[in-house]
Each structure stands twice: as C-alpha cells, then as structure tokens.
Image (cartoon, rainbow, N blue to C red; front, side):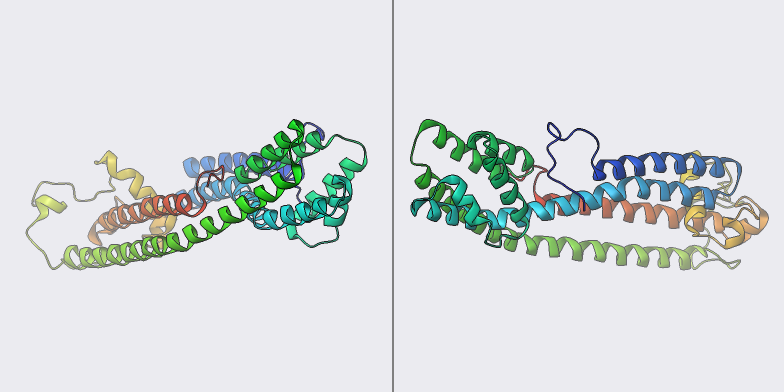
Length: 324
C-alpha cells in the first residue's frame, strides 16, 4: 500500500510512490525517443502514437497518485472535527493526553485511524506532545485546515492555556468549515455541469462544421463540392492557388497534415505512407484538404477540452494547497 504521509526527515529513501513516478518518467523518456525515431525514419502514424503513449505513461501515474492522495486528505478532513470533539470530551473526563488518544484508537475515524495510531505510539514512546503534533502537521502538509488547527492546539499547549477548551473550539471551527465547503461545492456543481454541457455542445458544433465543409468542398471525393468557382480561396489549378494543403507548399499546414496521419483522419494507405498526400490520387480526392480541416478542428477540440478540464479542476479542487 502506498504511504502518502511519509515523513522524509525521519524515513530516508524513496517511497513506493516516488519509485513508480520516477520509473514511469524514465520509461516515458525512453519510449519518447523510440517514437521520435520511428516518426522520422518510419511510419508517421506509428511513431506519433508511440510518442503520445509516452506522454500518457509519464503523466498518468502522477495523476493517479495525486487523485488518491487528495481523496485521502478529503476523507481525513471530514473525520477530523469528530476526532477533536471526542478528544476534548476525553480530556474533559479527566484523561491524560496519552489516555485520550488511546481511547480515540477504539473509535472508527476512517482514513484518520492510521494517524491516530501513530500519534499514540509516539506519545507512548515519550516524545513531547508539541513535537508529535508538529510531525502530524508535516504529514498533513496538503491540508491547510488541519495544519492551522494543529498549530492553534500546539500554541495553546505551550502557553499553558486551557487545552481542552482549545481543542473543543478548534473542533467546532473545523466542523463549520466543512459545512461551508460542502455548501460551496454544491453551488459549484451547477457551474461544472454548465461547463461540461458547453464542451459537448462545442464538439457537436465542430462535427457539424466539418460535415458541412466536406459537402461544400467535396472532401474525400473525386466529385466537386456544392461550392464551385472559388478555387482561388480553397486552392485549385484554375485559381493559381495551392492544389493541396499538404503538398509542402504551406509550411503552417504541415503539423496538421502529420496530425491527420497519426490519428488516421485520412485513408489507411495514406496514413501508413503507401500513398503521399501530395500524390495525384490524394489531390483528386481532396485528401490534403481533408487532412488539414480534420486536424485543425481536432486540435481546436483538444485545446478546448484541456482548458475546460483545467478550469473545472480549479473550481472543483481549488489550489494545490486546500485553502478554504
């Protein structure tokens, strides 16, 4: 099981998570080199797909671990106010801090149980309470709520104040914070739903635009499209313009032409390199223009999807440090 709350100051060496992440990064770099070689000297489609696979290999493990860690932090924050309330009640009943944590071990706090167990053992070993709580705070470095709560408890303990009253007050504040966050998330869900609807609507509009272009320009067919006499705009021998967007005359179009080959937006014989996009066969079927427009619209959808995901993630999870 991956330990997300390791104290590196006291446990030197790489954790299982670090080994997997660094290993995937190294493997991704190796696969990327292979993809580049295939892309340059072999099939553009195979090389491009290998290159894309290397990107996924590099970022997927880190993304999965980040998601699992944030989910655990969220569960711990949810149980933290209940734990503090029970701890305050135990102290109010006359228990020492060690006995209070021993009593807390018998309750079920979900993901927080492992941390309570660790705190109890450290206290039983004679480690001072402030130091134990500072270690706990370092392990919870991704939760500002817990860090601030623990900081208040530590300061109260050092100053000789009413530690029981302080813990009870911090528990109430943490519970109120959780309610505020819950209400905020409920309101933001509506905004996220609207964003998803807009994105899928954008995909539908993009597909509709390409379908219209294919009919108007005769993409993928030897027949003329519904629009004729505009060869000076879309390219054609009579207008003196380029007959094929992917014949090398337009440098800015070449990345889109390669993208079409990688994702198979043109027939298989062209994607595999058996027939060139600048050949007479490709010109007669307008495959060059097909490749360009398909890839252009596809890139637009990808950019839109990435930006939508970034904004949705920012709205849903807030900053990397959970500042509520």
